Image (cartoon, rainbow, N blue to C red; front, side, top):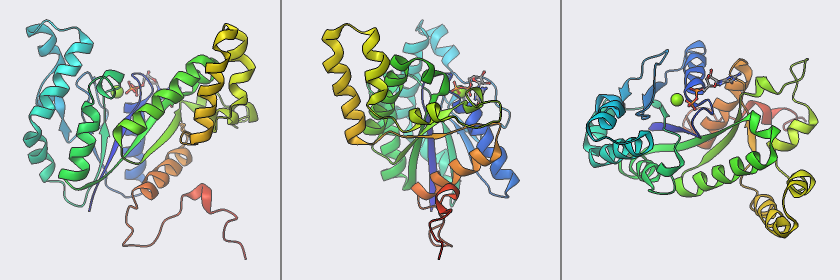
Length: 273
Ligand SMILES: Nc1nc2c(ncn2[C@@H]2O[C@H](COP(=O)(O)OP(=O)(O)O)[C@@H](O)[C@H]2O)c(=O)[nH]1
Ligand SMILES: [Mg+2]
């Protein structure tokens, strides 16, 4: 069985940093995972990827030769990748029984405008028979501005619905919002599992009353569907990375032929006699 985790989320959310943290952690616990870079705009990697879209096409060349801006260039690169899926298939052919971490571009255009990442997810999942899942990162600073936070939640929902593969949402850069004792306060905790009260309080205060109905509807949607809740990610804390890895494993039923796995933070107390 082959496994692929697509690491998604807006630019700057911490995707590449998370990929690196996962790889370092996997090495520590003696597990092999491989990094695939599908972000044509990526810069340097601490651990070099085993497969890199930049070997197929470079954003710099596209921008220079075709005179595209950065966003158009990215779309072009990704369309080019999808036109050359046999390249990807061939390159990935060497990875049997492997666990791949795929660093993806963040531009929302690639998810919703032109569903290029969904096409890629489908290709990995259906055509190449990877057990495919995704994580979506929203950065913790968004919790300081509720309008941004709700935009983040909605973009996570949109990504989840468009990718059509199991997805986990992560609140990244949690080290920036922990208290002096390194704990996640109750107020912060509310953002990890959003409730409609979050909107009533201050988004209402800042919007024209004629939008209050809309605010409430959006909050209700998030609440009713109950599809977005966040796992806290702090790359500086190995336990946090480990917990996320076990949730991702669980989502893909990684190693189900071996012994069953329960995410570490879910097992406590559940099995007491
Ligand atoms: N404090 C903190 N900074 C982070 C964390 N993860 C990423 N960053 C910083 O956020 C910026 C963007 O990270 P990067 O991984 O390149 O984001 P990407 O565009 O989603 O790949 C970089 O300056 C990182 O050093 C984190 O967990 N904590
Ligand atoms: Mg990156």
